[in-house]
Amino acid sequence: MSRLAAGLAAFAVLLAGCTGSTPSVTDRSPASTATSSSGRQVLASGLDVPWDVAVLPDHSVLVTLRDRAELVRVMDGTTSVVATVDGVVPAGEGGLLGMALSPGFASDQLLYLYYTAAQDNRVVRYRYTSTGLSDPHVVLAGIPKASNHNGGRIRFGPDGNLYIGTGDAGRRELAQDTSALGGKILRVAPDGSIPSGNPFGNAVWSYGHRNVQGLAWDDAGSLYASEFGQDRFDELNLITAGGNYGWPGSEGLTTDPALVSPLLVWAPSQASPSGIAIRRGGSIYIAALRGERVWRTTNDIESMAEPDVFLDGLGRIRDVEVVGDQLYVLTNNTARGTPRPGDDQLIAVPLS
Image 1 (cartoon, rainbow, N blue to C red):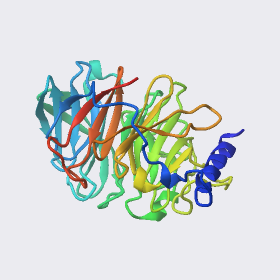
Image 2 (image 1 turned 90 degrees about the vertical axis):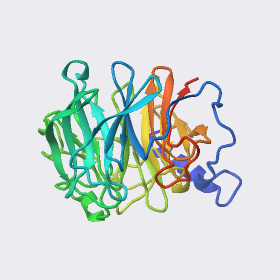
Image 3 (image 1 turned 180 degrees about the vertical axis):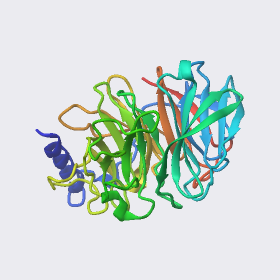
Image 4 (image 1 turned 60 degrees about the vertical axis):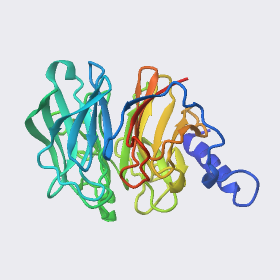
């Protein structure tokens, strides 16, 4: 069965819940979690609107704080401010968002940050030390900004290039304009130049996205992205160069041959997916904000496995990262949720 056929078959099963006993997409509620509180370790607490996580070679952890425009370092139970990043203008969902370490970070100490500035969203490269940031270099500017739909996740791919998830900034038409940077997944070289092989001769890698906040690769080098839908379906997509993912004309699974259909869809109330991470061997972990859980699925080539709930009970989840035999989970209750004692937190959860 082709991936599209498998996806449509799965979609038919999901929709069958509207007329029969088979669960629908809106019935993906957790019956139980795949892990308990035993073995979890709180690495940091009291984080104010944290957004992204990066693990350094010395095993300390960097966290971006969106509204404070602060980069903080977590080490041995202590959280310290490395820098307040100049030029960040937090507002709404904008601020200091994603980060990525250079593939050669151990020797070059280069750190990439995605943030909302006065006129745009942009990616800026810095030289990192534990006491500050220096040598700022704008890698890519001009990404549309708004009070929401700012995207923000950045990750280096196996090809050594930097991939950037952006939002449509509330301007739907941008998503279908392959000359615009909004509503896209972008690919640039580490210095910001355009790599050969980009399908439109500019930074655009794929288009037709509403708001991409998760990027990760599997063992085969395939890129997956999570995407916020509007009212009907959130998505997990397999990304291909030049692919059109449908927004704003299409949301959720489609039979239109001009569009790429998602691998999985959720009701926004059970997902609102942000960061994703893939464990060696294929398990995909998806952070859910409104859904207040971590979903887990696998890709068996023919189709995606029906996702199960790996973790819940911590409130809104902004990011997940596989670190050895643990999943680092970053909560996000100080933004739109109801903060609990200790929020927000970075928690290490054992992987079975």
